[in-house]
Amino acid sequence: MIAAMMTAANLGARVTGWGFVVFVVGSVGWSLVGLASGQTNLLATNGFLTLVNLVGVWRWLGRQRAYEDGGKSAQEASRRSALPTLFPATGIDGIPVEDRNGAPIGSAVEALLACDSASISYVVVRSGGAAGVHETLRAVAREAIRFSSTTFTLVQDRAWFEALPALGDGDWPAAPSPHA
Image (cartoon, rainbow, N blue to C red; front, top):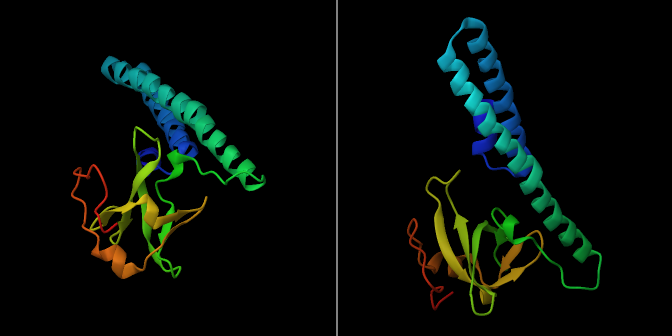
């Protein structure tokens, strides 16, 4: 159950990867029980799960962790340089969004890029609710957001944000609302 919570929470590569390590320990333990008790189905099932979980360890503690570390490294290096500050696009989910007065609005979910220019067209911002329940998603045009590596700030106030149309589940627009 602990491993399932760690992987389902999607709290980054390290937490997810260690969740798979816990899964490996459990599947190896059940494989040993199956071997000791002559339960070939238990052994076969958990032997296979051990292989799957090892792929999860490699994926999340190996590759994905390296990608996250690389993005964070570039972000930190850019903060210390005269170059524009960067933030890793893979880390956009969860970046806090505030209105122009500094009041919390919600958090970023996704940024959609225009293929022809590779520039951000709009950012989807979630507000309200908890853990995805009763939250509202809105598309905010790139021009309406100031980016930093730790926070996004709207150029408008909360009333302007709340007047934007809510997005339907899985039904996002090709472009942000004209008001955005």
